[in-house]
Length: 233
Image (cartoon, rainbow, N blue to C red; front, side, top):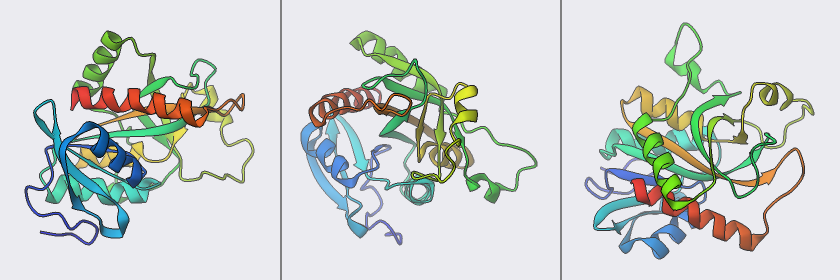
């Protein structure tokens, strides 16, 4: 059953997987939130765990950085391990004046500057979007918990260090909320394989103002995001 990037066997993964980028954050979620977590894969140190939360089986696994890495791991989970839905929990940099540090963004859609969609040989431009059921559930749960959330478009960028100083200008004009690096690939793979996906992102820094969270603030904010994701898993 093992794939080139996952040593798990059939049945090792739950139907729902939470996917942070950082495998150590996956371990943190497993150790602090799941009951009886067990390690199910550690190929390339991309850690994956399965346990229970509120009596329901949940898995959590790292996805790495960038769309190619996310594309590999979510494709294998969807295609070979019978995973039905993946909820990305990650960070993003705000490019909207209405989107502040510690805000939680529910990525309704994921724009991209990547050529990831070219593999599907479409005769136009595909719009990667979240599963509405997961999106609606997260928005409702956030409201009940009193969390500050924004819903809208994000940008999944292939570049972190971009040589073009004006690269963000057009996306800002189009009302994109923030920049990250994985959601578009997750949404495309989910669409192609008829699965469900949602990205829940915490704003860790404001690109327009230079404001960023301290390490303590990041930990508290990330916990809010993780609990929100677990509540709809």
